[in-house]
Amino acid sequence: MAVYIGLLSLFLAAVAAFPSDPVLIKLDDGLRYQHVQGPDGKLHLSDSWMKASDLEEVARFNPDRQNVYHLFTRENPSVSQPLLTGVEGLLGLTNYNPRRRTVVLVHGWLDNAASDFNTVLVPAFLAAEDLNVIVVDWSAGAGSINYFTALANTVPAGLSVSRFIAWLNQATSAVPSMYHLVGHSLGGHMVGIIGRNLGGEVAYITALDPAGPGWINNNDRFRPNDGAYTEVIHTNAGVLGFLATLGHADFYPNGGLGMPGCDSQECDHLRGIFYLAESLTSGGFNGRRCASYLTAMTGNCFLWGNLRMGGLVPKTGSSGIFYLETNASPPFSRN
Image (tube, rainbow, N blue to C red; front, side, top):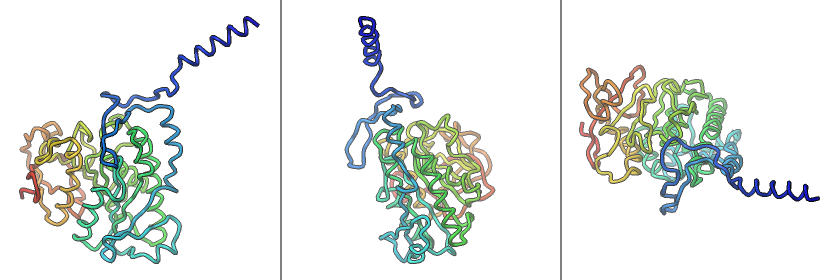
């Protein structure tokens, strides 16, 4: 009996010494706890390391059931129409037209269908061309205040979006060459995942300041051949956004960090949304070719050959690293 009690005591002591919520993965280098602005506009303390409890939250996310798809067209520019995977009857009641080009918008961490990313880009795209604009709301996966949970949800959410697009194409005879995928932050990597799982045949993919933390050694990050033409716009490189090149063409406006008119990292991180929106109608933002992303970040770019940043039409066949300067307020383009 005494031996049993002794063993039980040792067991209880071992359990007490073991963390109740052990850390499984540490996210890159840097601070573990950081304040981030939540959907309520208030600052919340976020844990950037993955714990056992985070796995439980990730396991509860079911993108095939929880992702929501909102269709906007010139016939319904402000009130969306729902699209449901596999429900062709509902599709026939919407304004979706497979003869139009289709833009798919994918938001980032802590955002949703009503975020600035969508409220700025939906009207900008519809003003520029008669399109189908599909807003992907994956806030059920992106809405966790703990960044690592949202990061872990990025891949399954992207796979689910690719299945939705494959179904839409099968149901309507639309083809990947009629698509433009645009994503911001975590969504910037997700559009690569989507394009990759559609065979790399999507005509145009734009990543707006794709997220940096957790993606440096991540094999699922954005890749040049995820689409026929891939473009990345870096506006908070090395902080909230990815530092190095990722696409066929990588633009570093103002050196990729410290956007004129911004006074915070969050403002820098969002600025590419407004640059892209303006480029859809103005066609401005003429980039100078650079030898590397390091010279792009210092503005020492004197190689031959310029390229326009953003715009409606993919610059298929173009590639390189580019630098340009912007104004502090609209119009942002200096061209």
